Image (cartoon, rainbow, N blue to C red; front, side, top):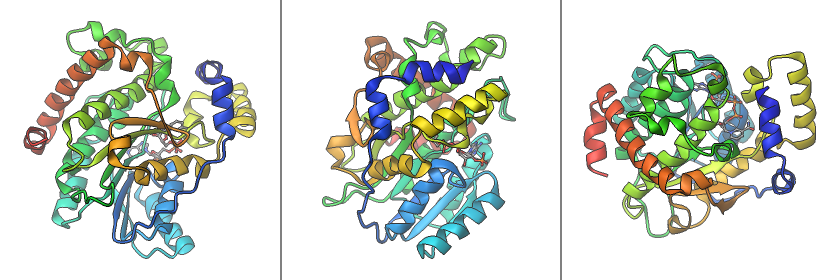
Length: 342
Ligand SMILES: NC(=O)c1ccc[n+]([C@@H]2O[C@H](COP(=O)([O-])OP(=O)(O)OC[C@H]3O[C@@H](n4cnc5c(N)ncnc54)[C@H](OP(=O)(O)O)[C@@H]3O)[C@@H](O)[C@H]2O)c1
């Protein structure tokens, strides 16, 4: 069972020690800054949004697919932090159209983005296709997340010499280390193969979330290579650590699975609030040169997986970039010129 598989693979002393490490609460003042965070109606994203609100941001935009839940979350954050400018904007990462509309609204309202956190994620074990024709995990975690980032690139504030903002923060996970390679790299088109319903057996779908989190590492590294952080946003990937949230509900569906999750949550999990400190840290910590294109874990720079660093991993990273841009150009015509100007 997948949840057990994850536990067996993560349970090293370093990981356990990190889980118990008390993380710093970032305290940098963000007066005048605008933060966009996806999937912030619950979980780690919601806690990160509360921290950003306490750092005096000018605008906090929660991109949520459940607008009622998002509006309630926004109101709760304003009530508890005193921040007066928190809003929920509709955003369904399983719909390219919804992402394009979100980006158009940013453009129409002339918003200058300082921090974008691509937090929202989906973890499922079954092959379910979105209306856009993509396997849901692949679209929500990767293609949708990447489309949003690319469309917002022209709307980031300019970096200043003293402040190492703007930033794009991607969320990855220890699970990206579990893959010794992506077998679909042998196919002529990696994403088409990953999306092929016939190819996606149930055993393969058990690893889909891991693959998505690896693709996030590869995409963010390639994006960082293409962005000069003196001109555009600093790109950082962060692992918030294992946290007790609703993320694992679908993969621990049995009574035994749930009990195991309750016990491991109790013994090992960070609270979502503790995990959220890693996101805010990634958004404000250090100079751009120290973190641009880097992977942060437990508020420190760590090396990515051996596969991500291997010659094949780097080659796959370049191929994936081309494939992703080819797909996203078709769904939103702005992508082509944005990528050309990187
Ligand atoms: N929890 C962990 O142990 C852990 C470990 C490593 C990395 N992470 C990463 O941390 C991030 C936050 O995870 P979490 O544990 O807080 O997860 P979570 O509690 O399950 O929250 C996920 C968020 O994503 C949103 N979302 C899902 N599908 C969406 C879609 N199609 N469009 C827009 N939003 C969507 C959810 O909204 P709804 O309420 O509408 O479903 C929810 O707000 C994820 O990127 C995850 O991969 C988590």
